[in-house]
Length: 314
Image 1 (spheres, rainbow, N blue to C red):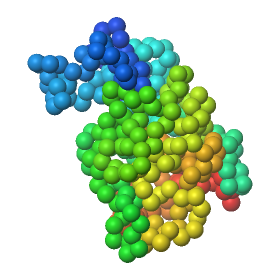
Image 2 (image 1 turned 90 degrees about the vertical axis):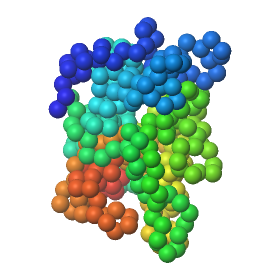
Image 3 (image 1 turned 180 degrees about the horizontal axis):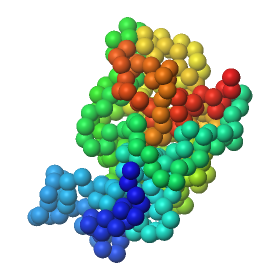
């Protein structure tokens, strides 16, 4: 397990920006910066580029947002967010978890309800990161987007493999939306863009992983299920009634627009989760009937698919 001291001391190796730091939807990622924008040189080199699109480094996002980067307050690999842009100050638990590690105390949720919703639950944070058991791909590898595509009564088409990078979801140049999210994720094939309004006050960390909403940006939780469904097309549902699809016939309601209501982001994190699964919860197969990766937590916030019992106490 990685130690915070090692992360901080190693960070100086990757400093790209001298005096300016990259914050998602801030820093060099600002829409309409004009013809004398100072952010371009943070990522691009005209004659000495090391990667395509004239990028200064391969894996350019991680040079600021990775384990050893110091150009941003957010470490998306280890699931950490710092109070200082240069990785100073006390690190907190990143809201989206981390691609390799996360600080979600998945074994100790509280505040169960039996009302079909639960606005007051708690999922604490860990003191140190635990290895991720599931994550979205962000390194250019292909990952199955289950449910991608039109309703298929035969159940033959269960999804589409999509090549995913950080820029599949985020616009590195900035676009004025929440977390610089693309209104249409690259590779999704979605026809309807979903732009989530940005907020001036940024909250990248949390002390309660059940608090999925961002109180500074109410449009986030109100619209994020529609945004997630750009890739997972057939997962979005207003009620548990049949869809006519051979595989995704009955779906849990997922169009909630407030904290504690059925919503994609209420149950799942965006980057990676460290949740574990037990004997029975580990038996859940992929939608095509194939065996899932052992101990795959499906980006859920609680062990053993326990997000269900946050709202449905048995």
